Image (tube, rainbow, N blue to C red):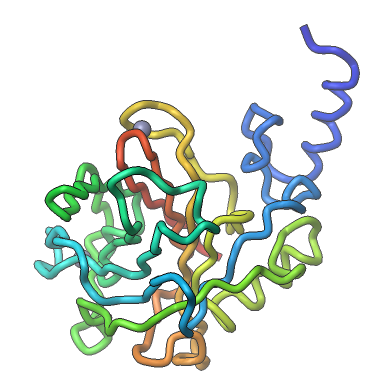
Length: 251
Ligand SMILES: [Zn+2]
Ligand SMILES: [Zn+2]
């Protein structure tokens, strides 16, 4: 039975963003003070003490059923980094974030299965409703050129604790950096579905990747035009099932 403190809190929080039914879960909301301790990282070019990188190909990747080329290994994170302890799991040395970036397959939720023994990733679920493919001359190369990346603590303005920081977070994301790791997700339209399609448990929110803003290419990623429109690709991970799930929202 709900007491008055609880119902009062529901009313307060419902003003902060979409309410998905469980107010104990901070990811139900776009903006709000509940995010204040979710610092997270900007992923930027540079050398770190851990081996994080953009591009390259260290896994056997699935072929996009549409483009007939390997999916992109976009960012890969070294799980020996203590800052990534929440994602760490035995037998998995690194966590790759993958998707095809050249066709409409990435617009719909996708699920991938990681096999660290075979060093292989397979597609469990994809849905292509739009049948769109990037023009040949604009295609993002696969594999992407590999570059070392480092993690930087997010700035105060990167964490959406109120409307102002929500706006400032969106202004710099895609301009100064294109990958947010852990911390608070920046929802473009509303909370994402975090249920694991395999075990139904809550998946870990890992990262969001966006494209560089038009006219500002090669600022955040210097070696390639990383342009994917206004899309934000959210990556979730289930440690029990070794499942990687993506979901896209647009600003
Ligand atoms: Zn494709
Ligand atoms: Zn699972």
